[in-house]
Length: 227
Ligand SMILES: C[S@@+](CC[C@H](N)C(=O)[O-])C[C@H]1O[C@@H](n2cnc3c(N)ncnc32)[C@H](O)[C@@H]1O
Image (cartoon, rainbow, N blue to C red; front, side, top):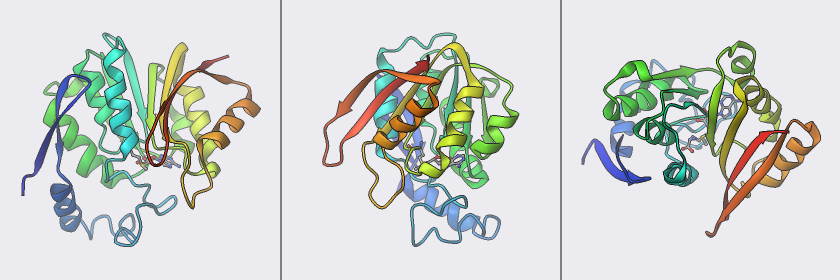
């Protein structure tokens, strides 16, 4: 089985570690990340222990493909909850001047995010990958970004405040957030409508446009900006 998968997203040829290669990396690093991997055989998510970033989620492909029509040349981009970082890689291939990738888990950053970035982008000064909770990120972030990209990050309503604070802290005044998500997450506390209610109650960002993606579980891409 191959360690690398090649795909075309937004007209760009992208390489990523195969699921097989990620499984091997997890196996080799079981001791090192024993806390983060404690429930990995039983569940895709373990709240505030392992948040799912080793796997590539569907909306990550939606968001990456969607970037085809956006001029990212010279733009600074932040990906919140990056996992495999496919949208970040597309953004860099499309001329973004710098991309910062954030994931909750150090294991994800070291075993998946950084290897995927390095497979595609030879100039390592163009990207940064950091393991941090949104709670910490929102307090410590000093950089501002033209675009914030985020995929499959609104399944837990208990994290909306820290996600929202991170967006607030990191977005330039005229910046745009592009959020990709499933409309519902079965068995989870968050969904798209609940996130919209949260945004409306905060009255800080507004959704300026959205696009539905028809599938057995409907998906959405939404653009948000400051009010
Ligand atoms: C389901 S994964 C999605 C990964 C990737 N964006 C994708 O679509 O393939 C959710 C991601 O959100 C991030 N996340 C979830 N809760 C978080 C929190 N409280 N603080 C920081 N990051 C969090 C994690 O980094 C995790 O990788």
